[in-house]
Image 1: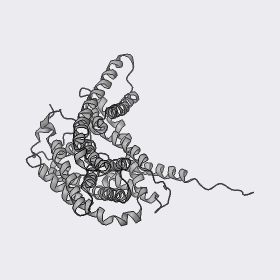
Image 2: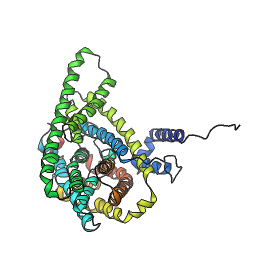
Image 3: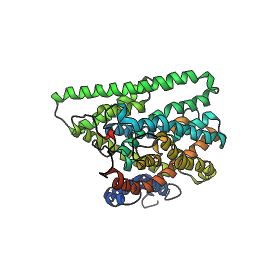
Image 4: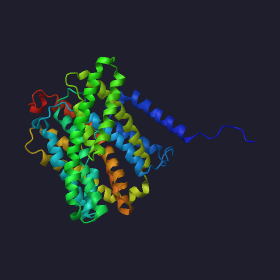
Length: 424
C-alpha cells in the first residue's frame, strides 16, 4: 500500500495564485498607480503566466457559449456603471462629444476595418463588416484610468470616453447582425429591409424605452417602500443588481438591445437629489466591475496560443495597427471637427480607443450564430491579437498621458471651460 499525500489539485493552486494576485494588487495599489501600467496589463500578463506556456495552472479552453455568457455579465455590469456616471442633462448640447463619437466615429471605424479586410484580407463584405463591428466597441471596463471618477466630474475627455464606451458596446449590435445575416442568408437584398426595421429601428427603440421605463418603475417601487423599511446600503446595492438583470431580461424578451437598455437604466437610476445614494450604488457596481475584469482578462491571457497567433499575426497586425494608429486617430479628428474642445482632448479621444471585453463578447456571440471554420479562426485571432496589442499599448501609455492631461488641460484654470461642463 502506498503512503503519502495525493498530488496537489491544480484547482487549489489556481485559488492560491488568484488570492495572492488580489492581495498584491490591493496592497500594492499605491505603487501600481505610480507605474506606467494599467491593471488590465498586469492581469493579462498573469493570465499568460498561468497558461500552459507558464505554470500550466489554467488549462481550460472555454467554448463559445461559456465565453459569451461570462463576457455578457461583465459588459452588463460595466454598462450600468457607465450609466450611473452620466452626470449631464438629457439634452443634445450636453452630449455633443458623445454623438460625434457614436454617430460618426463608430461607422467610420467599422467600414474602414471592413474595407481593409475586404480588399487586402479578401473577406467578403458581410464578414468584413462583421469583423469591423466586433472590433468597434471601446471598453469601459479597461478604460478605468480615463473614465469619469465620480458623479461630480465634469471633464469633457472623461465624459466622452465613458459615454462612448457605454453606448458603442450596444450600438455595434446592428452591424454584428448585418454580418450574421450575410453568413446565414446570403444575398443582402433578401433580408436588408427586415434587418433595417427590426435590428436597427425596433431594437434600438425598444432598448431605449425599456431601459428608461423599467429603471423608473424600480425606482418608484423602491421609493414607495422606503416608508416601511429601514434604509440599508446592502439592500440598495442589490436593487442596483436587480435593475441590471430585470432590465436586460425584459428588453431581450421584446427583441430590443439589452446592452443599450442597461446603460439607459443606469442613467435613469441616478438620484440627482441624493448623490450619496448614487455614490453607494456606484461603488458596489465598480467592485463587481473590477472583480469581473480580473477574471475575464486572466481568462484571455490563459487562452492565448502561439501557433494560431503566429499563423494569423500578419493579418492581425495589419488590422490592429491600422485601427489604433490610423483609423481611430484620424476618424476621431474628422468626427470632432467643429466640436468646442481642446485640441489635446480631441487627440486623446483618438488614442484612448481601448478594445477588450466587448469585442470578446461579440466574437463569442457570432460563433454561436453561424461563424465557423477557417474564416472564424481568422476573425477570432485577429480579435484576440487586437485586444492584446491594445491592452499593452494603452496599458503603458494611459497613466502618463492622463497625468499630463490633468496637469496641462483638465486642471488648467486658464483654459476656457466647455459649456457642457455646467449641468442644468
